[in-house]
Image (tube, rainbow, N blue to C red; front, top):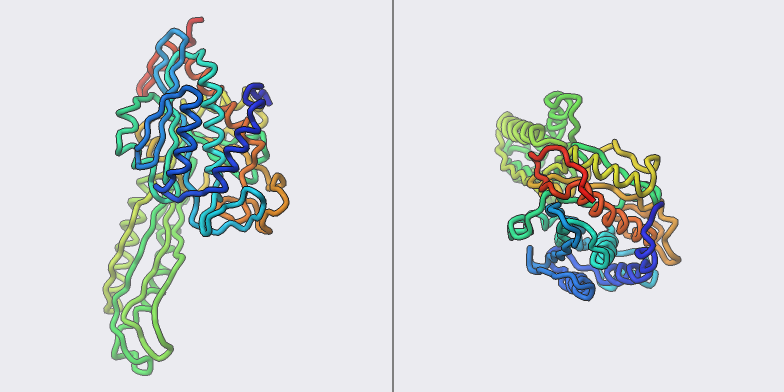
Length: 416
């Protein structure tokens, strides 16, 4: 790997920052201490800081000194932790019950801080870099909240880039793909309103449990018979709740679950068909339904030109054999998708390894995301930070003199 030597030299400092953040996890929109750590580091390196977007968001501003008009780009890291119990007992394990950095946002923050430190000391690029430290990725929609607070109007940028660690991909390897990379995340709740009765006299009532069972089975036909086979989508019913005693037909039953898609058109179709199936199935049994369908995150769709550019930068860092430039999309979701709806950009996966990096005292579970035994791999810190720095220098090297937008022609090489 072609890592930057200055970043390697302060890897231990980044490791200490990462582990400090890991030990003090904060949930969505509560990242006060984490934001203080970020802002304090940026300011110590001479980087102007703006705070308060989406309550706890932080934006650092690094202006290059090379002549030219390369415009501006954004680099984004998420800061929040998850509401779950850590199973690890090593020295930097969570000190807060029921809160854990189980998705690596501590590492994402540290990698971007590493890039920030290097960029602040090496400003030989023609443009402006906005360092976006975002709160509330884990279900809080912090990306949208920062945008609503003026992220792109206060800090106009031509493209935006994100990165997430991915367990199972070896350290030193990356994965990315143009188009859909991650799915939309949506939740539904279907309440079947029946008529309670004695279980020995079911004909006097309308059994909501049987209606719920019919709806649950019928919803899968949306996937198998309404959706085109070449379109990927998931309907998962994860909860069915009803009843209070063995001899009572209850008044209602509730189904809850998630829907995942890679396109908004497929999502529109699925929601419409779910409503029709639930409504008419209930009517057939003499019941009624109330359905709530919440669209949380849209699908994360990488822009082709920016993705090709990012893949080229990655290949120059770790070699083309270590970059899967057409990786399989995942049905997981990410609110960076909101940013990619407004700006061209690309989101990549950086390999976190198989878990062998974990120190003594780790939990017995696998080192997978959202698992109590997870820990970010500190070997990634100089790799991710170097990627960010290389992306900045190569972007402005290719775009000096061109302000790139979604409608801009192909970039030109900068004059030297």
